[in-house]
Length: 124
Image (cartoon, rainbow, N blue to C red; front, side, top):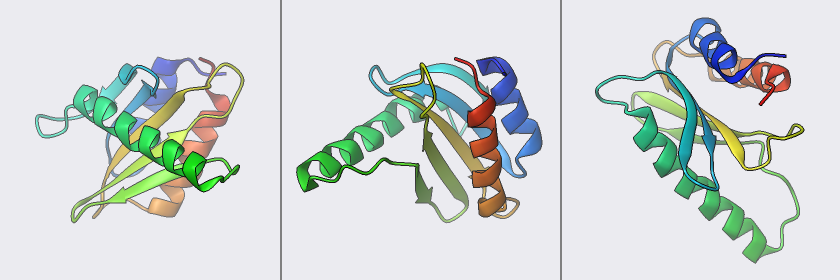
């Protein structure tokens, strides 16, 4: 089992094209940990903003009467992928992993696969 810091470092080092990664509490909008980022990608701002995305999707699913669970949410920009993975394990209710990728260097399928692996090993 990996702690938050180890899991975020693993994402930065093993997922090709990673710009930044954060573990986020979507009940508060706060980043519980971050790795990477840049002047153009403030991970604390991204954490708060993506919390709104998750809340909106959860609310929409409730209005539609969908009882399914969100695995991940993908936002595709012209030069980046932003991947939001809601955590499902013990003690992770209300948390998500946020991953920003350079679209020209990333393999989206592999990134999703590796993020699932990191989630499975994460001990919060």
